[in-house]
Image (cartoon, rainbow, N blue to C red; front, side, top):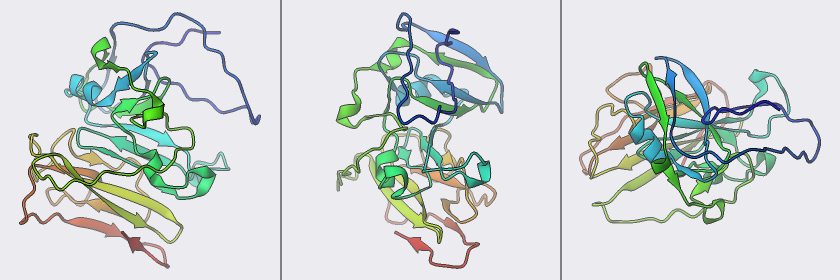
Length: 263
């Protein structure tokens, strides 16, 4: 019966019942909300509004303190032990969204495509951020949008989602996305994203908010290498306009015997 602080994320274990009803009472939130954050701090936030939250606008309004947001997606875990978790973190930044590393087909997920975060964060959806500097996180009404989950652009990443069809464009003067997939011998599917962004400041070097670090690297991974830094694994890389001379290095770690597939 305690109050829920607007903008703060909450997590809890379920009751184990097949169906559980939770009741939230109170006046819908409206207006500005802000709170301090310390450099290096990881914080669970939540969409505080009774409407979708524009993730892109939220990142742009908080560029001085964050570079990406990420969402936990369960992959059919049947144990409370962290080492046995089958879930992973989906990531979103100003380049694109990328699915988590999960085993396709478990827990009704079917395809990683259905767990790709989109521009709009659904009502009640929680998400994580890492503070790059000490500052303030800000929510405001300009970040709100009327986007329903039915149209596919607003995601609540706790339920089964159908696979979506990505529209392919040959117009290299607009934003273009390439998705690469890697599957390890256990069946975990990792997706990495390359974005060509003609109207952005992104280039071949590291660009905050356009390049995203992998939150949950596994023992076997495919990732982008940026600025020859082999200590960091990037799951999203945003660059400028398409150029046929670009060469983008990838890192591949294989520790298990078996079939490793890149697609």
